[in-house]
Each structure stands twice: as structure tokens, then as C-alpha cells.
Image 1 (cartoon, rainbow, N blue to C red):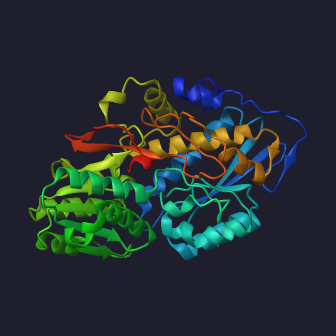
Image 2 (image 1 turned 180 degrees about the horizontal axis):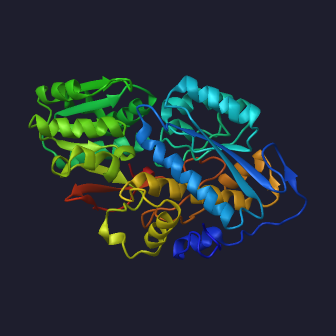
Length: 407
């Protein structure tokens, strides 16, 4: 248990997050899910099903809010964090989110995970005017405040990430023949649309083979064989962890050695690279915006040291090589700061106002040069990444931090 605020999220970067916010504490004002003693947050993610590797994100959120409560809560209020399993199934997501909004009457929804699952509730939560914040998917449609003013993403958007891979590939590989493996839903399509945009006018002749899989498929082995047989010398792997690991391993097993680009959401060393095999993963490229816990260069950084200490204390036994824990901790720090800035005005409207008011906010475990920036017309909190290559047993960053506008 955490016994003091100083012990919780300690470190240079996190001190600012836990410092008292400059808010005026006047008359208290509440919507459903808030009171003098409580802030009720709703959440769902796949603790079971084909994307259950992401379940550790939800477990880290649970530990985070418990630690916040043990340290005194937020402006004297305890967080009631209600998390439900939706199995990465859109119909189930609709069911559990309706439960959270209509029965539990949460103040806000936070970090609901998955593109197809969030798509299923997108219109509903905006009609209900419930904050749908920092959701765990990088689809570009989450940054549309004009049409969906209650929904905001967190991570860099998939469309931009895909374009970055395409432009890097074009600058490095002569006569590319591209094979694409894509999860057959909005998540996969967003990545591939961005990638094709990055390819420009030559996209049709550059793509040798484009295959898809369903989340209910047992394996993607046959798809990887098709990609190899197409003669592709570039592999764009757009898949969730279970299938990403399968694809990397199968490519190695059949002797296919293309230049590989792996989408960021499946770049965890623990849940993807290690199961696929370190030898099979050498040289794979991805885009990063968070410090990787397996990268030794961060071992002495205050925020990484604080994170390891926090994990040891609050999640003993968890695999700290899994970057999903870093992700969960970082985005939770943003949610914490957002709620602190609300002061005693815990209305849904004020929650969104605070979420849309960050300028150059530093969070623990973001890469140097990457900060949180939002406004009433900009619902993309993070718009920068840095490329990384897998080497030995960890990711190795290279090049400069690239911002969305530069793509």
C-alpha cells in the first residue's frame, strides 16, 4: 500500500502531476458519478477473448487507482473505478457500457479498449454526453470534436503512424514489394489507409499482396504463407498481439526474411516479441512514443526508476518487460491530472474542458520531446513518434522525433 503522496508516482516528471493544481475551489458542483467523497469512473477491456493480452492494461488501471486512493484520493475524494470485461466483442461492449452509464451512473468513461468496440459505443456516449476519454485505440476518428465532442483518444493516431512507415520504407528500400497482413476491422483499415496514403500515387503497383484475418481465426499462418509466396520483400504487420506474434514466428519458420514494420500497439516485448522469438524478431521496425522498459538507456531516468518502484510495490509479480504496463501508467497519470484540475466542479462538461486544455504537459514515461497538447479543436493528445528497431532483446530508438504535421 502507498502511504504518502510523495511515495506515489515519485520522480522528477511525476512531481508536477501530483502537485496541487491551480484551480479555484469555489462552490461545489457535481454531475452523476461525483460527490463530496467519490469520483466514479467506468472502464471496460478484454480480460478474455482474442485480445486478452491487453487485459494487463485494465489490471494496471485497477492498481493505479487503488494507489491513488491509498495516497488520499483526488482533492479528498476516492476513485470508484469500475472495470468490466467486454471480451473485445462490440455487442458485449455496448452491453457493459450501457450498464456503466445507466446503472452505475459513472461520471465518465475512461480507456475503453479497441477500435471496433469503441466504434460500437461512439454515437451512444456522445448522445448521452458522457466523457469518453483517453480511449485505448489510436483510430483517427477519435479526434473529431466537431461531430463527437465527448470522445478523445490518447495515443498517436494509426493513420499517421501508417504513413510514417510508408515514407520510411520508400526512403530506404529499393524496388519494394509490400505484403500487408491486416485485422479486418476499423483498426486495421485505419493503419492501412494511412500507409497507402504515405505510398502516394504508386501504391497500387507497390503492394504485392494484401490479406486479412478475423479476430476469431485460430492462426494467421496461411496468410503469412500467401504473403511470402507473393514475392513481397516488405511486411507490414497490422495485428493485435496474439496474431502479431504468430505472424513473426511463422515468417521465420518458412524462411521469409522481409523488412518488417510492426504496428505500435503490438510492440510489447513481453506479449509479442518474446513469444515470437528474439531471433525471429531481429530488425523489426516500429514507431514509439513511450519509453520501453527493456531499453537500458532509461534505467537511470527518474520516471523509469519511479515506475519500476511503483510496479514492485503495487503490482508485484507482473512482467515489467510488458510495455502495456508503461502505457497504462502513463495514460492514468493524464487522467489523474485531468481530474485534479477539475477541482470541485466535477461536471461532465468541466471534465471535457480540462481534457481539452493541456499545453506541453510532460507525463512520466513519454519519450523526450513528446508532450500532451490539446484544445477545443484538437483532440489528439499525442502527435509525435520516434522510430525504433528491435535489436538483441529490446527496442533501439533511432532518428528524430517526428510530429504528425511533418508526415
